[in-house]
Image (cartoon, rainbow, N blue to C red; front, side, top):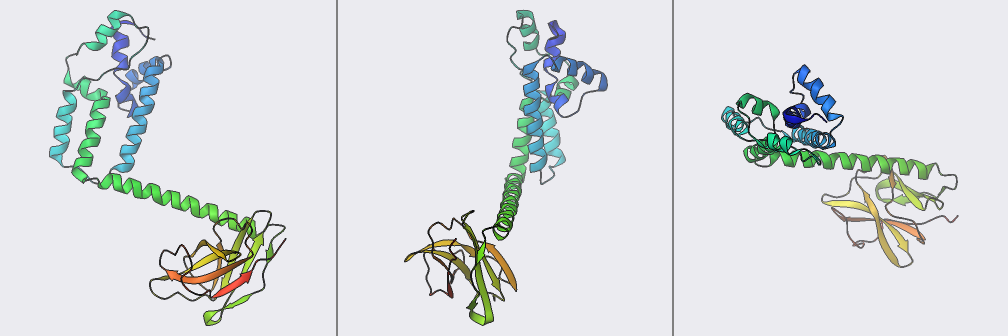
Length: 266
């Protein structure tokens, strides 16, 4: 690690390096220091992660007055360098002294300044940025879950032990059947010509464990041809049913089944 005052100076450049704000010469010098300083390496990683989250969260441009106010605050805040074990006392004292020159302090973009920027953006946008980031994260998770369901549906339909029930009639000229893979312990509902349910209603699937019914998911978008991976394991279920339920589904059937199909055995 670089020693003396020069070493203390290098510790304060983590913020500027994290956002690619160092001139070429200083960047090369700092990168040599970074290779031998675990504390700075950790701080750079944390600051880059923070900068990345800020980039994802920004949804509204701040006013020029807000920018000027934040920049004034940055110029007046001294960065607290990372604690490095085993440093000589003169180095610690050099790091602890404030150096003149607002432009150098501004360029270093300390951790406290990044936190102040985040607080300012949140105050101006009224939390909209954080909300949008949460919405985007939820959408990504839902898309991933959808891909996982589609992949599992394909595996059930193509399973070597997959067996299909005979087609059962459903209201409106529709028909349905069930594909079961006992090896995978999963089932899929196949429907053809399934009409849209009444307003405020949804088709719900059920496994029948004797006289007890347990939910196996909803048919979100009926159509001419539909394949739906039923939720949960087949287990000891001997049949499956389809009912019309209030939007969002019900913990137990509230209507008579439109169809009740026996599940094929292995």
